[in-house]
Amino acid sequence: MRQITFVVILISILAPAYACAGERFPQAKAAALEWLHLADEERYVDSWITSASQFKARISQSEWSSAAHSARFPLGPLVSRTIISRERKASLPEAPDGEYRIFTTKTAFKNKSGATETITLVQKGGQWKVVGYFIR
Image 1 (cartoon, rainbow, N blue to C red):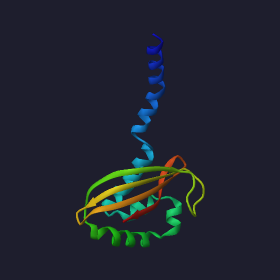
Image 2: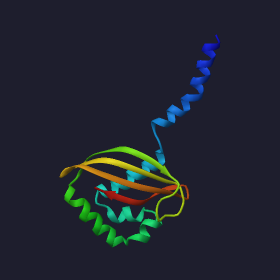
Image 3: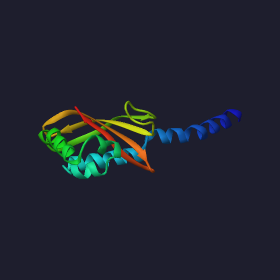
Image 4: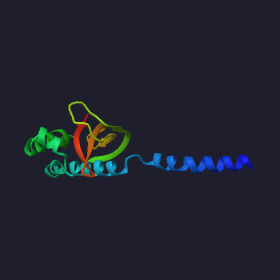
């Protein structure tokens, strides 16, 4: 009987941890995917508008639109995107301390099947905003 009680207690302690492990950082992930969707639709102005102030301070709206179009247009339309890693950081180089989430994706476009995207978000005022985006 003690063994059964121990197993039940162990399961009740570990079950919430396993449930949370299935989906890490759901709000940040949703914000990242929404932002990427704007870029996928070539809505670069909208992606700039919805980005964090740190992003906007580094690049103007017109510079971002031009750079994003130059980088993304030759790749063609999105075929698939899979998140391959998620990280939580409290600090980043050349950035103020905060709550950061970094997502890395393996992405296929019509003209490039092996792209890797890295998108970094910061939590500001209860919302997740993009502070960085890189594509290789």
